[in-house]
Image (cartoon, rainbow, N blue to C red; front, top):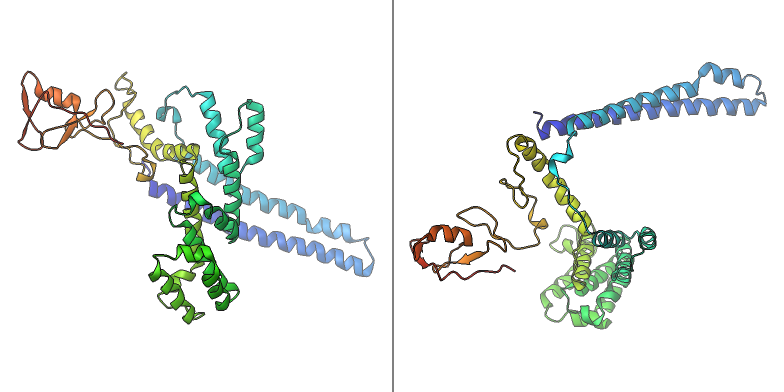
Length: 374
């Protein structure tokens, strides 16, 4: 079986061939076009177009251009076939049919479109589905405008949003935005403009409280400006890192203010599915002919998709190795260790006490409080 690394190397070679052929094709096409232009210019200068048609027919520049493009397309087509061969998977083995609530699905799609700033598509969906306006419509419209401003390194709208009363104490967004304004003033208008802002902006004065050390670092950096690159203060002026960091912080605070996820639910589920699908396909292909049993809630393999996709607490029983559920909740033993309720009942059997599977302390069968993970 071809490994993932070998698959990647094979596709990289295909891409390199396409790039090389594209460079050669562009050179040939440009030469042919230059030749056509030169012939036309020559005929224009001499005001004699009688032989132009014959010359162009003899050169056959358009035929050569078409042939060159066809050769390039052949390489692209070959790569496509190679991808189909390497990654051809039968997705039916990695999924099961799930009935989705149409109202819930429509709501998720609407919020997804709003998050991506696809407001026209959102309006069409609302109209055609006959559904209500999303409660987040105005919020996402405002956030999208601020995101666009931050990408263009404009801070006014973000600062104005963060200065609203209920958000002032939220995280340290406002301070980071004001600090970036100071750095931006140093870079664009000079040290005097930055110092004036620090002294006279009421929001900066308020946010500076309790941040004496950080304010001192900014002040010291002004003394070294513009020779800042090889000093410990350079991180303050590293725009390639600071602007993306501020944009990410803004999205985190904005999402938290509405108690929603930073990424859309659809994109999150799709990304998690892409990570899990290869293992699901492989598992189901191996087991589909061995048993007719259908595992609805659990499968006996670990599919690790990353901590960023875990939104709920869960507990795996150390005895049965199964995730606890509402029907089989985790229970607390006298010693402080935790196992599942079914595992405890199996260990109790007809006895009044049983020994903890982790330590020698005994627990009474009647003394098994259930735990709730939040």
